[in-house]
Length: 261
Image (tube, rainbow, N blue to C red; front, side, top):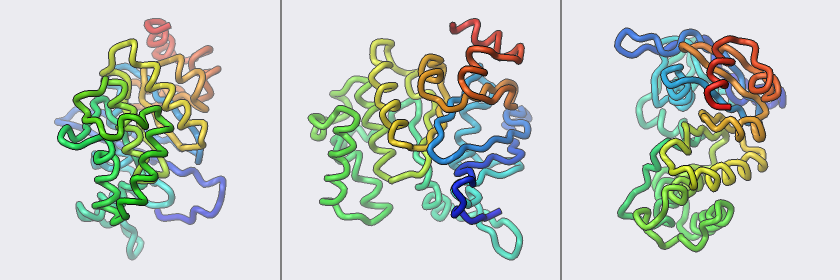
């Protein structure tokens, strides 16, 4: 399922007939979707609808039971040889995963490292890049997220919103082609949510391809090119915010949004 990525119409992400179960519970039930380059897609749905599992399958943190995820022409977690797919070894899968950045609910920063050290550690070790080059890139990203003055601070001295903005900058240091966000504001106090959403909004404006699992309907309405609503492991609605949020057709979508709006 490898393909050329020369065509501008080729989606950068293709999810094909994706299924995933945990202990007999079917979490994803044949999900199909595509994401174009530079597109911002927000994924809404109740807890347990399969949103986070979908994201984790996109960067192969979870291995699908069947189906495939193709990112930039490559099947995630596999290589094509002799007309068949062969699962990658752990190290090779990790290298492939560099094309997809991910920001989680929890910040997952290294507490014993400064902000700068958190940003440059992975590209220095995994990509073998030089410290001086990385420090320059890290400072530019910290400036973008409004935290340049915190480069020598330790995570424990930062607010939750600041830590999440550092986590976004850290993911961008690997120069990913797609960014995944798994409810990045859900662990934050309400007064800190806005600063993280603003950083994400600025990132979207740069043309970064983004898949965002969120309950922030206002962000989805204002920033997303498309909104997907998931329920019971399937995509129920998929369209522009004006359709899915402001004029939903499926009963599940209507009920969900009525509790938030």
